[in-house]
Length: 221
Image (tube, rainbow, N blue to C red; front, side, top):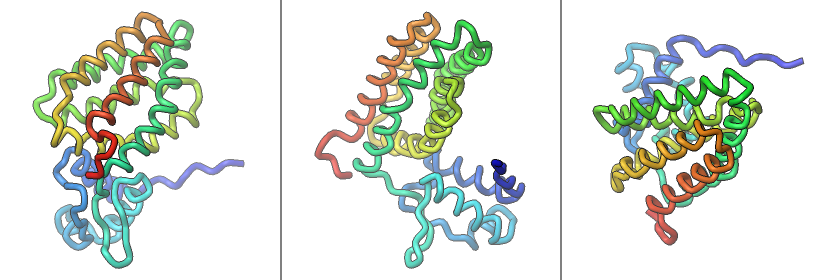
């Protein structure tokens, strides 16, 4: 017998989403302290939902909780970036290949790629980096969500926030989103042409080239 996880209380969810959004859009910087009393005052809640939200964010890898240093936004360095992107490199191209393979016979897979096209359009029309980053996250998620293996999709979801944090930090010093947008369009073109292997190969090259550009070998920043 399996048990569904208990739902997160609404106040905790509110704080969780607000802090996550601030981290992934660069409003909260890597290494910045997250003080429970200050966040509670900011959001008009008690410290309990703040504490629970921070625990959840620590579980996703966006924040670090220390008995001595308190809670801080996770710092991104080359080692962390390569670890996260290595997971994506191993799993995401195969998930996309399966989504494209299932597209001919499964409505959900067709809808997923339609969502990817919508996300790509939102990224192109984004007014700022924050909107673009969020749209790009949805683009990538749409590629693997209907792969047919819920565990594979959840594993990719588990690193999605950390990958977005890496891209936020990388874009601050290497604003390469125009190149990445072109790569996204090519990936989607191949997927919509039912070229499963070509789409997977293009996605693999896209993931690998991003982390190599942003965090080249020998870079310890």
